[in-house]
Figure 1 (cartoon, rainbow, N blue to C red):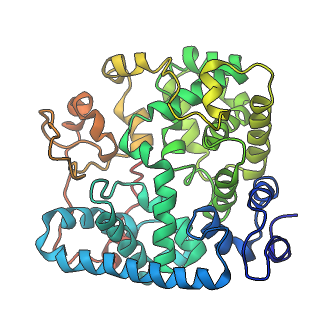
Figure 2: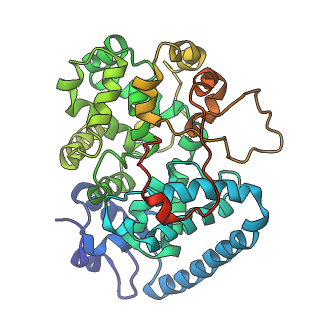
Length: 409
């Protein structure tokens, strides 16, 4: 039975403290969460509330976090008119917020678009070094949809993004991709061999979006909450998303084994976007986690997946060659058939603030926003697809809502 009001009441004392945090998270992992208690469980799973806090302490915490959020929001609002950096972030946020999940009625409302805009702008103010990067809007929307309270959605987004921030800082995703390839090689050698040799998938770009957006676009928004709860509550590994990737690949192994090129593979993984069934994926991922966790023999390069005490990343076996030869292989991949299906053809100036000691490599033109860390390799491609900056005159959410939905990731 999923976690519901009765289950929560059974693990709380008379003051509202959670007495058995481990088993509550374990039950969430194996049986899920009832929609009636999802907002509270998300605030617990994302550390907005402490499990040891009382009901009264949570109310006081809400008041403090609301005040803190309002101060952050007031700060960027006061400086927006005179800050070119904030204005640059806002142009991107306005555009992305207006087209986020617009197939749902809730996100077609101007009020919801304004909430997305304000929360993302507040994050820019909160973490000036990170700023706004495309994809954050996708990660925020399920949280706002679930909580529907501005300051709570902001702080839960902060906690969630902190878990995966490294993926946005290192856009090559070298660590998670190396873990996926090593796990696939150990669990399913034939599938791994096919992806590496027949499909030319050395870079595994076809799963890039899965990891970066935590499968947000691969499942309907109504069920992505089930997957995220599963990953947030996993008691056996902090790399649950890696097992979910391999689970998805294994579930679609029969079709994947028929594909013979990286272009076909990328097109296929894009074609199943939003159509995946979450329950088989969860079942397969749990099986893989148990298989590795309780195996008598675990390869050295996979110990990081199940070792709670591991603090350093595993050897980047297989991805040293990726970094060394990424430019060469990129020349063999057509923009239209592969990169466009992953990142889209919307190109924008690199807008993320750079640290004072950063040395910018010589580049010209524009590059896809998500590939700023690989700009030198993609310069020849980006020059073929010049961008058309958005006009700032009279730009409103209603104007942008009618734009075609360009898939930027």
